[in-house]
Structures are given as C-alpha cells and as structure tokens.
Length: 238
Image 1 (tube, rainbow, N blue to C red):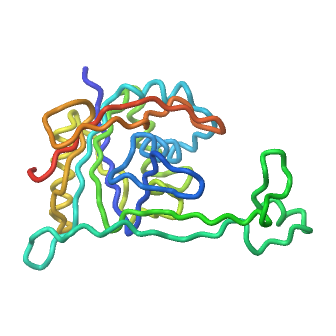
Image 2 (cartoon, rainbow, N blue to C red; image 1 turned 45 degrees about the horizontal axis):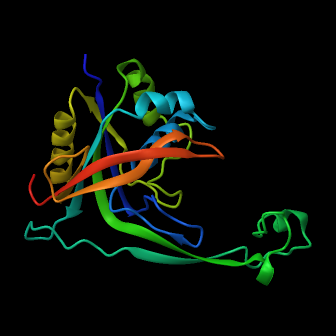
C-alpha cells in the first residue's frame, strides 16, 4: 500500500524558511524546506533532541507543495511582496555584571567577552503574505499519531521561525496521493481568494528550474545533520 499524504496549509503574514544562513544574515527560501516542515511536525509531537529514528523514516518520502498568492478585486493574482528585512541587535543593553543577563551576551568560543562588548548586528528576511499547500508523505503506521499531534500540538507551531505564527489550522486532512492532497489545497486556496503561483516537486521533472537543497534532516538537536535533495520548480499553470 502506498504511504499516505498529510495536507499542511502554511499561511501567515510572515514566514522564514532558512536553508543557507549565517549568524549575521538569516535568509529565507521562497518556499518551505523539508527540514522546516519536519521540524514543525516534531514540534507538534513534542519531539526534542536528535530524533534520528523518526527522521530516517521520513527522509526518503515525498514532499510536494503549491504556493498561492492573494488575488485582487478583479480576481487576478497580486504581485508577490518583496522579502521583508528585519534588523536586530543581539546582546545589546544587558548588564554583564548580572549573572543572568550575562548569559544573553554573545561571547567568544572560549567563553570570554567578545570585542565590542559582544553586541552583534543581524539581518533577518521574511516572506510576506504567502500561503503554501504542502503534501507530505508519511509512514502509514504513524499517520494517526501525526494527525493527533497536529490537531493538538504539544509545542507551538510556527512557519520556519518562531516569530512566524500561522493564521490558519495547519492540518487540513490526509489523502492517498499527493495529487489529491494538492487538489484539496487548491480548493482551500480558492475559498481564501488566493491564486496559484508555483509548484515545487521532489526530484527532477520538467520545469523551470531544478535546485539542489541541503534540507533533508538526518539529525536535529545540538549537532544537526542534513543531506541533499533535488527539487523542481514549475511556474504559471495549475
């Protein structure tokens, strides 16, 4: 029997799906990464730590998605909003003589004070006003557990970064195929007056662009590990 698909609806004013970021610059991909989606699933389960066994079961399974943008009063798709850049100061304004506040100040690798007092400037980028229908294939034996967790999450769910709160229920049903899941997502998009923008398929297919992403998590926790995944972008038609 083919493994089923969860339909996850990821919608919010801001989303951030990092795939190649550094401390001072936190970029976002144009669409959810597999590591971000599986991280959301682990939050729902309350599954912390490395989770190597669970991730091994999910690593080779399929993930497809369709992106949807708002439409105007005429029913036509609105132009996509540019990436929002947010400026942060990390470690500024803390008293280094206070034991608790001192923990919040960045330090060198050996625990000493950094040059300039430890204050760091960072830039963080966010997608604006996007919605994604994600068809995530899961083991049939774990389907009920995943559905229960998504309906009543143990930890807060967020859209890539903890400041990005979803504005719709994430779980929107489960289906036998990715096509059925994404078709249901398209109906939901229509109800929300959103239009198809692009599709991302796992693997190499006919499309506008084929990318290699290092976004398949093998281990979470303190020492994260990932491997590559090939995806194909398809624009313009449903």
